[in-house]
Length: 199
Ligand code: URA
Image (tube, rainbow, N blue to C red; front, side, top):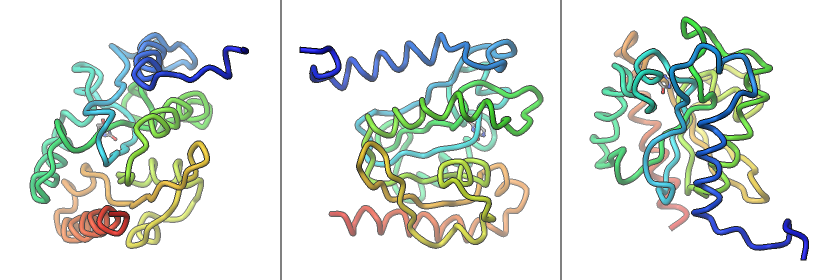
């Protein structure tokens, strides 16, 4: 049989994807990075959280959301009895740090987002929580503002499956605008209701 017809062991596919991302040189961001940031958590997690791209701390430590935004994200998860170690997988659209934390360029998104799609396909999460404008607009392929994307359940088609998507603010924005944390709390409640609805 042709190799493409052979069943692929999910753990092998996951390890292969990790290796590919670690060694990726598909765009110019590879030149400035300390290391790639694949994501953290269990690939068996029921929730996938998606941010934009590694910042300075993430680039140094090789893990997503380890700076100030990450601390806030951890306490938001704790407030709904979830933890990054056990309950979620956290990844970014872009796996390498853009210089000076600038917005990723369309070419960088085009090269990198297939990795995220493969992560989604292998994790097969019950729900994706998208953090911030950039990740939301990229994943949902829209120019709509984050305020209008919040508060409803979107759907993303990945490998023939419809995955529910909830959009919330980026924790870095919440650090700047703490009054908006109430809306992020509402977003988490919506995310929890998606899991319950799907049993
Ligand atoms: N901001 C992001 O979007 N992702 C990270 O991993 C860190 C900060």
